[in-house]
Length: 258
Length: 258
Image 1: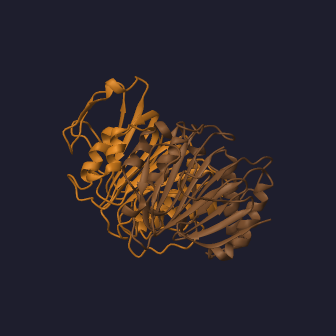
Image 2: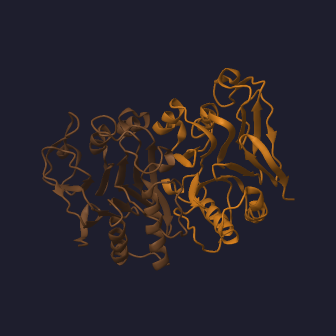
Image 3: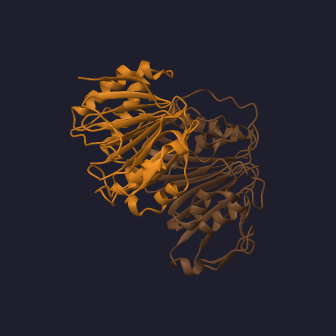
């Protein structure tokens, strides 16, 4: 199993607190020692930090923690290899340009007997995850030659996700930097923090943050994770088939494919 | 003007020494304070570090210096903005997937009245450089639906580069992780280091390295830069129109388009 981390916010927000909890699970408190990656949107640009080794002992991960990068959309992942060897090319999140934007994707789960049609986007590594991402973009690109709003893409996104989950486990995060789409096939949880902000205590290490000291009353920050990252807040657990569309911290669409 | 840095080697080699000289020019000894980026191939994977601010004062640049990343192909760039605002999306090098590999590109120069045909690959930022990169990939993709060896691509690569340089200045580095292509429209220099290795002294800061202590007799390492980075070695200066194709440190093709 891998672990996912996503964030959608209405102001550039750093994810140091949540990332600190996540990377503990990468070889620290968890078994995910085969790599980690985190992507931060900055305007239309994307910063991607990745390593095909345990995050809990990573120099780059420590740098990401020390050097708070503020972003409105973040996608992170820690990996326990199932399909595909341990290598940088197999490390999530994956990125492709579509319609002049960076699209970013991370997946938790395993797909079996998954042989998508070859298309324009081709996997660089040999994971089922990147193959699904390329297939998803190939479907969108084929259906929509021109850029489309996320609401217009939803039916095709959901058809694709529903198909992938018939092949195994498919929890995923997908973004183009503007919106963040989440799909739960087995396990995903989320929390939206807004005023009045309080304190939060990480589950995986002895770290507490007082969000009130770091925010303004207008801030809205949603964090999505495979499992709740804090022990004193109320996370909403997703059900199989649940999907959400987030923009600037707010839910702008949700449903269940079943 | 921007500055380019490239490396092709037959063993994973760190570029800390050359990068140390380059980043001094990014707001230290040079005027290139509008961003820097460096891409390291690792197998089929690619690590990309970028910042839209001066490299000489960058936390991430210092991390890249402290933490020697070994690679067989590296493309680096420091930027003084001419076309396109200062932003992450406008920071070189640029990356796209073509035929299941990461293609990476950096450009020094400016193109005027350059309006390439729209194609599959679309710029994310608004630089002439990224527009040229997308146009180059669109031309290759259209001509070669299937992966082709660099020798087969050369004629089209050179036709494209020759076209771009009629629009202004076009010095560039391009790689798919296997080979490295360089094109000189005005200024580019290179050095191939092999046994017997000696000492090198950076031009831009007081730093000397003894390559003998860091290499084996079989190592071959070629470094390409806008201007020679060291003051005690013999760099080969490229002439306008010169192109080279490098693989594992060795020149496997060269010529001049004029």
